Length: 380
Image 1 (tube, rainbow, N blue to C red):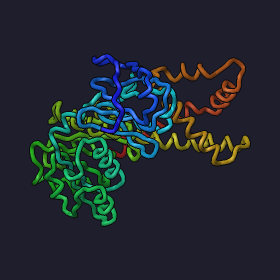
Image 2: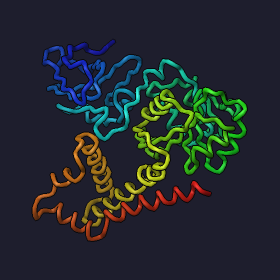
Image 3: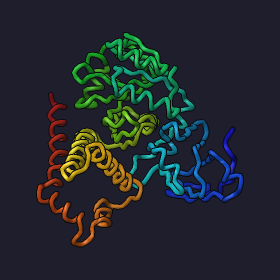
């Protein structure tokens, strides 16, 4: 490769965090890029006195490079979150693959080896986001995927990714994994249409809101290898927060397969189906709550005199940075809040105003209202 090869000393057993220090040398100081070859590391700290233009992480067949002109995500079995370029240009930075509150650990190595074919019933934005994530993470090659949609425009978008497109749902029904990504009101008819070509080994993954496992299995002609997933809109940027529940016919291999697919575009947890409405209320609808929070913080900044563009940038970055601290430190949000709340200071004054307006209770009520509505919709 063109990368400078540097000896790295690191523990080669599984651990939650490992520090890796690059020994300084003339060759290292002159390097414009560096390659890091982790075998079993889930996270690492890298400290150096040099600034590199790019950092590459290699493992097996999963290779991703981050440089100043290209942003991509480290995902799947190594790193699950996207890192801004500036985090790799500082003197010291941290890369974390899974923290104490991250998603479950699903490896994509086995899936890459099996070369599963993936079909999408529906080629909307969520399908596009999933397909992009699968291709970029190496979970599945574009030539192993097929998508169907009634819209020629949406089929054209998927075709630009190298994915086969069709107007025939039966073609998708022959895939090893079928993603049901159509509107909830037509899921039943679409599954009934393809049930005659579904193999006993096919795994059906539904991201349609409000449809229970029993409904999906019945529509698929009694097929029991079904997974129901609730992702969220952040899938569009490779940062989904998702949860899944499995039907009775699914085995451990099915769980690993579905888990690894969604781990390539964010984090995923396995839950009982009775909890999926709560997931809908929290992470499914949650991005909208956060968007309102960012907008309100920016409006507050404007009210205090900041230009709109600066206020919006500061608000969004503040939410991003605070979330990153929760994810990477593993500390309780209350403890992190106390870290920045000085006696008699500005922060406690702001927090008092939030408590006075019932912000905490409003957010809890929003989750419950959304969860209750999800329950109602599942009974329609």
